[in-house]
Image (cartoon, rainbow, N blue to C red; front, side, top):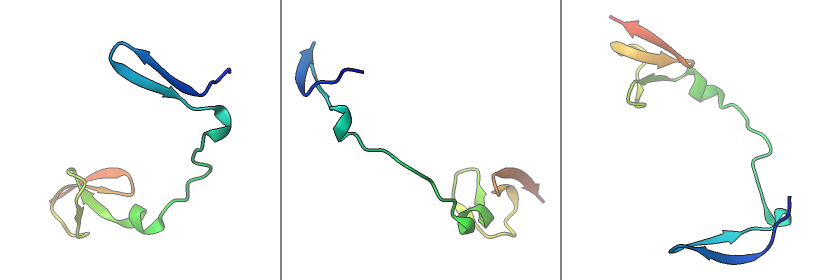
Length: 65
């Protein structure tokens, strides 16, 4: 892929093209063990493990009555 440095104007929006040698990225992702054991409600709020309603534990949804 050819890249070039500089700015180009298309319409009223200004775009910058970054050369490939300047690009950075995410190399690896480590799983946080404590987050996978936590319990969340459907709003993404962390709740107690004994919370009632629909909760998410370990990426799966459960109904707690």
